[in-house]
Length: 110
Ligand code: HEC
Image (cartoon, rainbow, N blue to C red):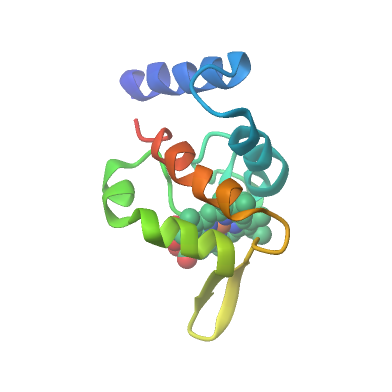
């Protein structure tokens, strides 16, 4: 728990200073993704809890996510059993912006 807190503090600090992340992915995350996935990637938001979004600081979750899937899910959205769980962002974001989320999401890992 303490280790997680320290790691998270590191993430928050690097977000604040803009050192660890390319600015656009961090900005896009805050503007478009954080309301559901949480600023810290843990999805402990009202919507995140309700939709049971996975915790991206969890190494097991990270291991299950391939880079290709992160790109595909962000571009095309996520549909489970014919129901749209998350809309796709390819009309709002460029291919490069979507690709930048791979490295960004990887950095949530504690
Ligand atoms: C309206 C809430 C909402 C927003 C906004 C949102 N997502 Fe999601 N996202 C979800 C849900 C719900 C899932 C499916 C979770 C599940 O079923 O495991 C998901 C799944 C994903 C996945 C697939 C991996 C997984 O855990 O299943 C990725 C990658 C992802 N989102 C990235 C993003 C990015 C990047 C943004 C911003 C550009 C974003 N999301 C915005 C709700 C949202």
